[in-house]
Image (cartoon, rainbow, N blue to C red; front, side):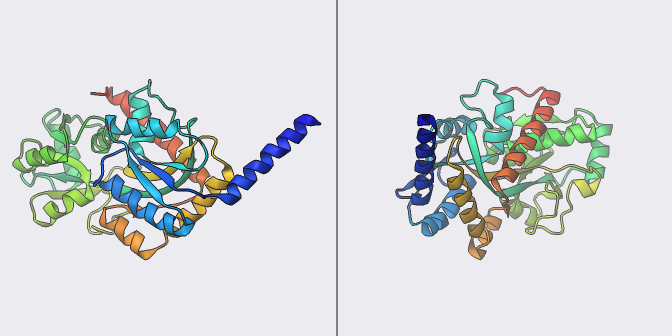
Length: 318
């Protein structure tokens, strides 16, 4: 009887906590520096949630180690609903497969709240490369194995992984040339030192429109609203190909389910707001959504996908 009484009291306390939530500011950990796409995403969503919930959302930038530092900080925070984390393909898809000794488990240490957006990449080539379609690129790569170089903004990043997935699905042999950031990668792509790259649409769009780079395809399942004239990789001869950078809100594992569900409902409403959708699309991102269970399933799919690519390509962390 005493055990049942204690259990009932604890359950009641949990309900009271959820009903009272939130009653103080909420920390929103972003594992990258201020000013980038992740930071913009967090501040856009955080400001709207602050208005809806009546409490300040404090963005806490914890950059370093490709997002690992921020993820570890969030994973070990108190599961009280007052620490949230902006996760993504790096923290919950790629890094756990590249670094098996991480200080967090992407499944066991987090409670998914909501997927919020996905940002497809675009495959571009230097205009001197004699191809105008994905099929022509694949044909060229197969006739010149190991002679085409593709740039990325770093080993294990979304740009690199998109290209490795492309190689795996097309059976092509191209050489990875990693750079320390997007700017030097684009410099060599524009000069012809490397021939192609998968890049974020926002960074590449001005160069495409100026005719300095030739777009071949977008990596999402559907065409991008920013460049509807550019076909997807899948419809260009690589059926089933799909990848994107993505963003989602997570809480530490053990966070009260009622709190997680409340946050999910509020985020769902935020994602319907025209100004939020417009802001995300200006960053090259397509608004997403869904339940916590949907997001959990998405993370498991991403972990499995990148595990296969990383093992086949024998990618090692820098």
